[in-house]
Image 1 (spheres, one colour):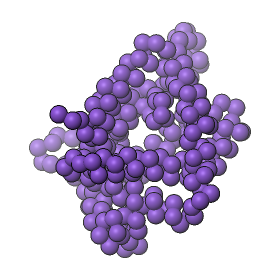
Image 2 (cartoon, one colour):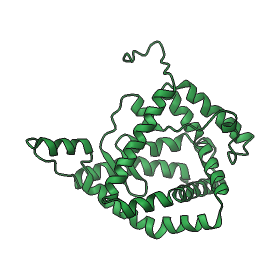
Image 3 (cartoon, one colour):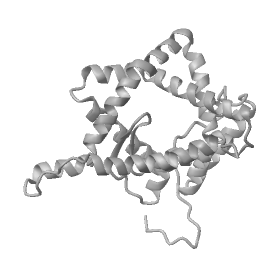
Length: 266
């Protein structure tokens, strides 16, 4: 039986992602300072980056790929498009991810945000012509970000050690599971397999990567030019961003748990 894009991607991620974590754990761990050196040991624990040697190797690999492939393509893309076009592309690719956000909000007990995601998907997929436009935001339903890593966080799963994955970039032992789970929740995964759907999947993934890279051309250039240690800077920014996303979700929506679920008092 011919393997579809969905099954190839899912099988590849299911094997590759845990494999990368295990390979890093076995091949390149940072040596912790002795516990008697309290200051250094506390700093090591706070960084929570025991795979730093391996992470830095992947960081360098990604920099090479970015320098010679992604950045030039993104610069060319910016040269031949306008900001308005790039905004519409971002709206379109974001709309494809709206069902996944809705399911994650439902799983984490955030009913209001789940409802917002559902309304956004219905409005933008119809009135917004497949998500090219964002009428939902104008009607009072702004985009709200979440993912499976944040859902796991709401269940009390700790962030775990920092990971820097080849191609995918910054992540963590908890957030790494976004990759296979988010794909399962896309509309393409639920649709019957076909050649046209396969081609669409490749095209959508490619344009999303290019459009996202174009959005961060200046910030990334600035960090690479000014930071004493770009790897550490990106690590810090990633963690700050994830903490901010989780805090915003906690502040915005009221949890609703089923009667049979004995959750901790909040």
